Length: 281
Image (tube, rainbow, N blue to C red; front, side):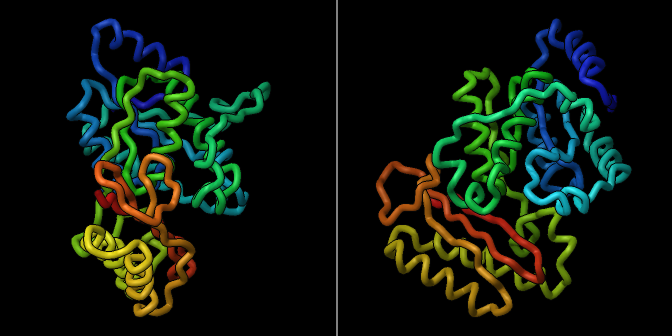
């Protein structure tokens, strides 16, 4: 694995490979890597000749400076995981490298995606996400970019960025990686006790109930039963639970044949905010 810390060095290296018509895949991350991230690397390897992974804790997508400050940065572990996974290129720039002093203000029209669900709970977050992803797309010029389904709204936001900017990159959504019991893998899980991780399985059970009964129960009943599963577990605070049209993430009250739907859930356990979702149809 080759590591670069400057845009110029990375571009010079990639230029050589582009001349050989090799397909390039990008996996953008903020580090603190786990098996979910490595699954993105593995999937990217099936789709492209060269896999570039970026590790950059992006300051513009944090609402709270304290969250940015305490974000985990286990860089030695991350490098080891990527190297063992056979990643080709690691791009690990500084903040100054990605955000020079003369930086232009950034804003993109994300429509309702910017104010629904995570957009509402974390104002400005998706503007920061699209800002850094656009920079990385322009820098790497990937044929494919791999993102995890677990952050489903983020993937829809990035797809809108691609559509608005008419970029040629294909957005590939990789399935959520779960523990054997169903807990969605997340760097936040390390902040849970073992008892907390067991409680968190109620999120998976609630989403699974919705998926299992989507064809034979009303939306209202599906939501109520899922909420009951979470409340019966105890010591779980539900922030939101919604059944939405996948394309727009607008909440729905009925199911149309041929349309794709997604159930979204966010809950707090032991002071940790956990996010999950499940494609329903």
